[in-house]
Amino acid sequence: MTVSKIPQHVAIIMDGNGRWAQQHGLPRIEGHRRGAEAVKRTLKAAQNNGVKNITLYAFSVENWNRPENEVNALMDLLEKFLQNQLPELIKRQIRLRVIGRYSELPEPIQDQLHKCEEATSEFTEYTLGLALNYGSRTEVVDAVKAIAQAAHAGVIDLNELDYEGFRAYLYTRDMPDPDLVIRTSGECRLSNFLLLQSAYAEIYLSTVLWPDFDETEFTKALTEYAARERRYGRTAEQLSS
Image (cartoon, rainbow, N blue to C red):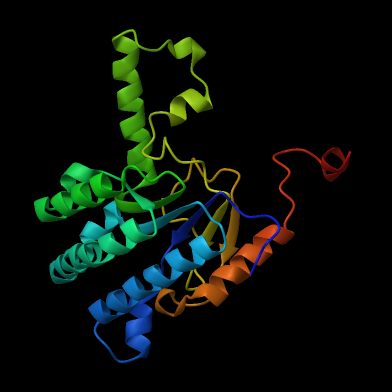
């Protein structure tokens, strides 16, 4: 399907794995496994529709509070997913970018992420952002610390700092801000995800649980996005004149 207004960057809060598993009488980790299949479908759908950047909320800083066995299973699943998907990313020339507090992840995961990032670093047309150990508030704190250090070193002048200068210190500094944020499972919150970058993003809430999300659902979101008028604080009359 072709959509007249294609977002440059789609960010997705992948929600509903646990509820999907519960509805099907399966353990929670099976919901996460099926969710990994939905990731593969969504990547293909994004590329098929010309979306150049997609960021997936895979593991938040708050997710460490889940039961230890579930966290461990999620890390194992992530490692296997990266191993299996790397040839596909290379084949389709998609760059992998990890956003979040990288160094706090288990070392085997860090190693696999480094491998995937290095192997795909030369690709420039399509980018997959994986938000791992990510939280928007911690991102802003990390950015402020880095800016303070840069100012102390005389690298930047705080009096000249604007948003574009600030965003150069965010995890997503080499990606455009999201145009569209999708959340699945019918929940109506952003859950500490790209709060600053999504200031002017359109938000699309899908009632579909993430493991059931597919190209049809992705296209629905793009169609809804294309029908909206983005004003950035201006009036409709200003846009039409």
